[in-house]
Length: 230
Image (cartoon, rainbow, N blue to C red; front, side):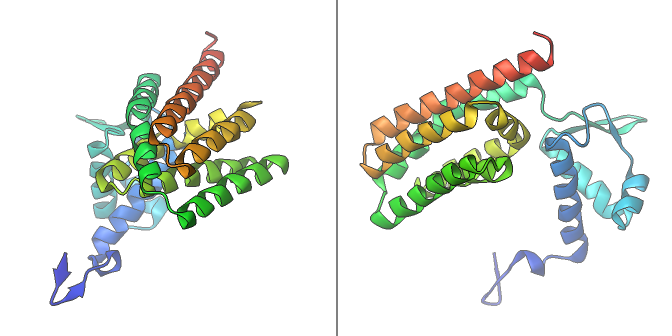
């Protein structure tokens, strides 16, 4: 959107809108990382005092969370956290197995020497942090690897969809890759995806990505089973 020939940036939005989004981000992060648990009620008055804002941006932030199906508005109770349940997780991984390979296939079709170099640097860094046993940075490089590929697909719609899916399960992706032995396997799988993309082999990149996502899903199923006594 433009106004009088000037591009409109997020900082140009009304203060209430800016505050609402910042409150939304804090609440969403708390929900997705497990700090705010399913079944918990979000009290507008309490949150406004905690965040140092009026109730209006808190109320708008809660509406944003409702639109993302992260909370449900219950009569006489307010907003109740839904979070991300096991069915949501399995749905996300299943959807990823179908469409993330497509992003890698298209990335292979659009690869350039400069793009290939950037992808290699990311995987090299992930391996470096693995050797240093830096779990946070391993997870960070994991996200950067996938998001870079999404951007290389040159499909805004596909990139937006996959970024949303990855963000929704960020806690569980970090949990999965922190499981003993998974990080090393994930890096090896990234190498196979990387080489396929760099070679311009879209079909192989798609195949290796499907294997990678399904392996991550199986690893998460084991973790969930352990946590539920299954």
